[in-house]
Image (cartoon, rainbow, N blue to C red; front, side, top):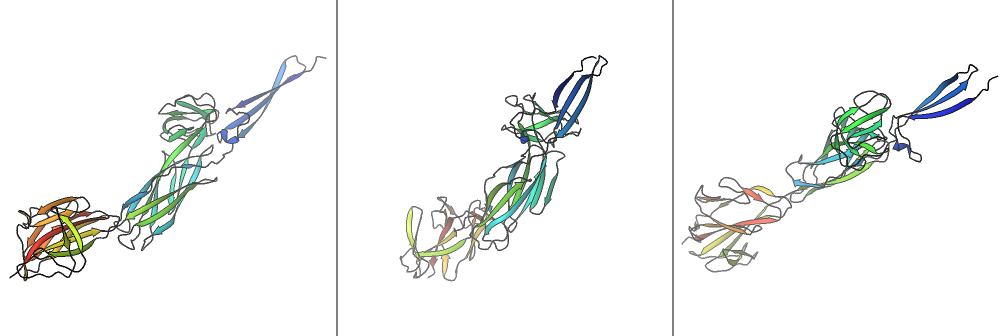
Length: 410
């Protein structure tokens, strides 16, 4: 009787390269681990026979924590209840396979609101990806996979995901991906058979060939727009703090932004001094212009017929935001005083931007500068950008003034 012998050879044919000691997350989700054994034997015929047995294990998805960037806090001038500040976020997948990341935002704190602030989402990923927005929640589908041996700087070798189509583990052409800790690059081609090895071609070559076990993670984007609500007290900022989290089934990534809506609040104070005979008792304040400093008062000034009076109109913005369209209208008591022509050299009014440190002189003539005198009515457009027809802007914590002279009628 011929000697019966059997040689058992085990061949482990993997569609991925599994390293001893590596965690499961170092293998891409949906990869098929094929374990095949072959039995060789002699059945007495003198011819070596063989028979195979195999099992296939599909690697499970292991969720990971996504990466959420942190945009800088925002600040704009308050305009109305819907004044927006937009924050541009990027979110990068975690884990070893495609996943849906739920984004939640909530207002953690707000101040100086007569009515609540609000917010909204807009989101985008690569072609064919799914974005769902519902109120304060958005969800984004992002792809992810892990390299196997044989990858080059431009073409990544990754496990097929079990479905022959134009995407491997959710990664498609024109998606933006991170390979390991590198910089983001665009996907230009995907080859995805139903089994074995798939390839991902990159627009920008990596610096070195990646080893097996390097993550390939898709990056998506979304914007969070925070709206101010109605301001409660002008001159005081609205400040809104918004918390945002992004999570699949693992721990969330989180970020907090602060939206500040600056508000301006203008005040007007009228001062006077007696140029001919200095006096006054109330609200003393000194002002310097035309290289001289004088005492002005808000009250308690007396004058005799023929005396010259100098009026000063001070516009102040104690708020943090600018005020716009600033114009001063002053009605002269022409029954008692007469406007002084050529009070300051060949001009009649002095305009001073206190904060900017600039000084100018205007005439009373209509259409040649921002000042006009029409009978008893004096109009001066003040602030940055003022024109002959429109008022200008006074920044937060800034001030401007105009000065003009009259004589008391005899």
